Amino acid sequence: MIIAANLKTNLTRKQTSEYVDELEDFLNKNKISQEILVFPAPSSLNTHSGKVTIGTQNAYAAANGAFTGEIGQDHLDEFCVKTILIGHSERRHVLGETQEELVKKFNYYKEQGFKIVYCIGEPLEVREAGNETMMKYISAQYEGIDTDYKNLIIAYEPVWAIGTGLTPTLQEIETIHKELKKKSSAPLLYGGSVKITNANDVLALKSVDGILVGSAALNVKNFCSMCEYAQNIENKKIKENI
Ligand code: PEP
Image (cartoon, rainbow, N blue to C red; front, side):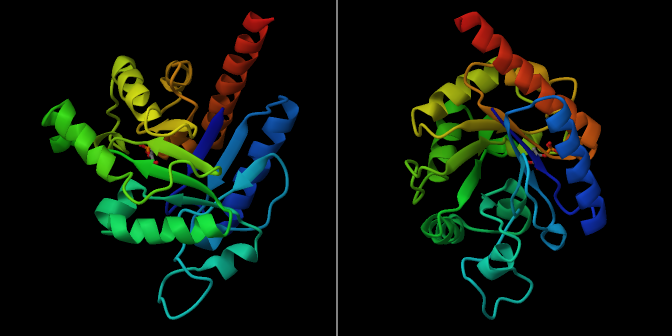
């Protein structure tokens, strides 16, 4: 399974380094072999080797250039970062990134062989407009995206569930994930108010290949526990198949 932490605009470089060290220590002591991704703020990126993969929350679709306020591929290469989050709802809705811009970014980092966690999800008014409208909206977020890209991970994150404490029911997650699995065979994560209290149930769903966690991941001990839940679920599956 894939367990990812989006640290957003939190944790300085020093705090991030302590966070990653504590996480790495936990993963080693507890023999956790799941795929663990951490997305620090751009100024907290650093070289890291170990079980944790460091990814960037954003980067411009260029190696470098006149793009004030952005970082480019050169800045990622400096720290051997080869994983990027694209299409997060905060970038789509707060920072106004369009599908066209996201596709440009996707294609650039795909060309460079990056692992891409591509986020999709609908706002509340779209969900309330019914299933057909919702699927149409989500389908538009796949436009221009190579869903067969071998280093692709998709994260379904309903916008109304991000940072709100609200979540779809487990049945709703299962239903939409089943629909989304028809669109791409890439691993499919769920994100949106995953907490220590619901992570185990979400991870246990058949159609969920992992979770993308924001606020609750800021507490490293909570995030470690979520990684352990995933490991326990995988261990159980292996035992049942023997
Ligand atoms: C996110 O930012 O991707 C996210 C899922 O946030 P939260 O867990 O806080 O809802």
